[in-house]
Image (cartoon, rainbow, N blue to C red):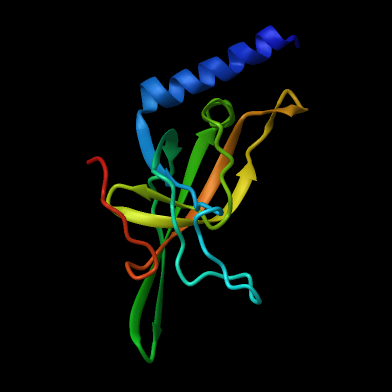
Amino acid sequence: MTDRELSFISDITKEIIKDVIGQKVYYYPVSEIKTKTHGVYNESTSKIFDNPIVLDCLVDTNFQTETKIDQFGVDAQYRLEVFVQYRDLLEKGITPSIGDYFSFSTIFYEISDLVFTRNIYGMPEYKDGVKMTGFKVRDSQFKANIIGP
């Protein structure tokens, strides 16, 4: 495989996700520079976010929920998987991290897991995509204006 064929595969994948599937999430990266942390514990009580970035993606629309009932009542945990084309992330200069946030529809999710989906033809330097797994956050934990439909 030459670089030309690998670029062609990435371009086709990006075109399918962007032009055919057409789903989008809004990615909110945590600003490590603007967020103030405690000197001893290296933790922050509130996080400061950069402006949201639109990512073309494939969203697993089978929302997975887990319902827990305890002394405080019923609590439903929503989980969502988002597949983003790796080359699109490189072109936008984005490195997603666990703890960052994204929104889909009117719900905000915190990224709890990042997995590179596969290598193109087994070549580790050519990634195909990234799967971001997110859990719904509470309104008190993250609040932003809803963008999009």
